[in-house]
Length: 108
Image (cartoon, rainbow, N blue to C red):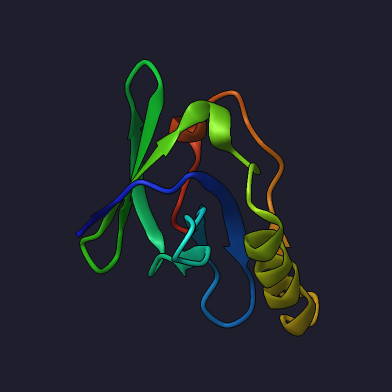
């Protein structure tokens, strides 16, 4: 599956299986609410002029606009904040970077 979120963030998961994930948020419309997804874990990334592509362990692809990092709706931001809080210091939202393609996505 391919997903193109309205806003997104990169989350670092520590613990016994450390890895990075994409948290994506979509703004709802008049008759639908906001939605969010978190991918299975990033295995690779690439970019074009205005999009980052993140491939996940499950084979999914997240196409993320470079200018929409951290631009989550209030609902999606609250969900992300709650995930971090419940992670008990094992989950961290990373600061935006100039180039996400230089990350080493595999943690040991």
